[in-house]
Each structure stands twice: as C-alpha cells, then as structure tokens.
Length: 262
Image (tube, rainbow, N blue to C red; front, side):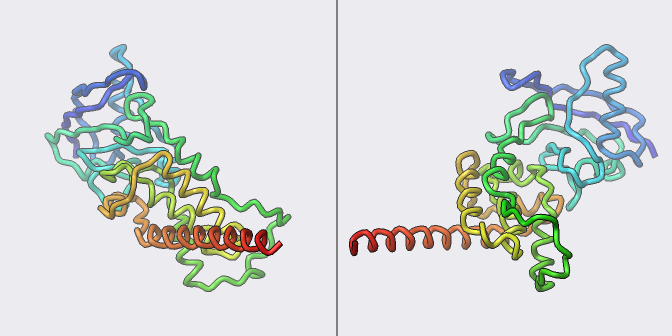
C-alpha cells in the first residue's frame, strides 16, 4: 500500500540560524519503508530539484547505534514504544497524514543542522567516569568472575542504553538522569566496577548537572526510551551518589581528627 503524506520539517542552516518549518509533499510512499527510507526518498527528490536535502543523523539503521533520533508529531522517535526512528515503519501512519518532524529540543543538544543535534555532552559524562581504568591485562574467562544472574541481568538491562538522547528530549526539564544512571549502573553493579564505584558516580553526576536540568520524576524519559530503560536506575544512582558523598565526608572528618591528634 502506498501513502500520500505531508511533511512539516524543521530546517535550520546552523546553530546561529533561527530555523523554521518547511512543508514537503511525500507522495506514493510504500508502507513497508522505514521512516528514514521515506526521508531518503524525499531527499532524492529535493536533490533532483536542486534543493538542499534534509540533514538527519543515522548509521546502523538497526536500532543499535543510537545515532538516529528526532521528534515525530511531538514524540521522540515517533508513536511506537520501544522503537527507534530507523525501526519505525510507515505502515504505522495513514494515507493523508500530516507529519511534523523536528530535532531534539534541549539546551544541552544545540542544533547543528536541520534534525542533527550536538550530543557531545553525553560524551563528557562518559569521559568523567563511564569506564573501568584498572590495568587488568588481557580479559579473563568470563566464568572466572562469579556474578549472580539477577545482578548480571540488571547490568545488562542498563547496558542496553544506546545513548540516543530521547530521554533528554522527552523530559520537560531537559534532564539526563536516565542516560547517566544507566551508564553508571551497568558498571557499578558488576565486580569489575567496584574499585571506582564511588568516584565514578560522583564524577559522572557532577558532569551531568553542569549541562542538564534536574529530574523531577515526570517519567517521560522512561516512556520514550527505545530500550525501555527503567527509572529504577535513577533511584540506584541517587543512592550511590549520596553514599559517595557520605564516604567523602567521613574521610574528611577522619583526616581532620588525625591532624588534631597529631
């Protein structure tokens, strides 16, 4: 079945440009196409007319890389749950539909061009502690490190985050707690992550708060996450962050007590 659609697309030449919506006709769109394939067809027509194609991020087109992402009819990644833009198919729309397409709307994600935004703030959070730095040499056999299945499953659930930014775009506060908590949890839950557990959560949360808004439990992040990451990880991160602060305070008090005794 073919669809005749009207697209209202956000066009913006660069960060300094004010941006505006432009309307395009998208006739005879096969409903077996993905949303990005539909945009490919529209762009081919724009190029044939000598016009600037619509810029949008994509890479694997398999819902894995997290590169794609924009707001479709007011919802990050579109109307389907647990679905990235590249996995969204046109059969989820109807003939004659008008579709509004715009980039992530978040202060921490400035628009580069059209639907492409700068998500390097996520990289700064990862750079602050989203890794294990212990020089352990070659990887050991997985069976040598015993991990309870429930813990391993929970860590895997957190590691499913693809860092697309939908949680930030969906949050009224532009918060990044869901992304950060997932990246903290998948390391802090496992034995390999324990040596840096407290410094990791402190550094990553402090970096997050320098760029993003605060979480007030709207739960929009969880609702639009294509990997259905649970906000339970936010609670876990907050608990670890408070414990880290108490540990730092205890160290300071003990150090001051030692100086007084000396």
